[in-house]
Image (tube, rainbow, N blue to C red; front, side):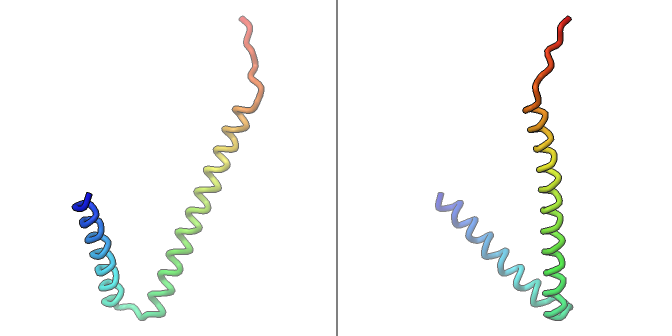
Amino acid sequence: MNRTFNFLFGALIGGLVGATVALLLTPASGEELRSQMRMRAENIRADITEAAAERRAELEQQLSALRAPKKIQTG
């Protein structure tokens, strides 16, 4: 358990250090970088909202089909 925790902690710290170094070494200005990050976040949020709406519509359709009375076939 302790080895797993140490590994995860090291991976987290390494990721944070790597992200910080990448942000500091980018050729874009701070304002431009923030603008790009904001636009990417908005695009991701829009994609998630759209996917959630589509999935909700699918589930509502399935629920309606399950609630509909079943026709009994005679043969």
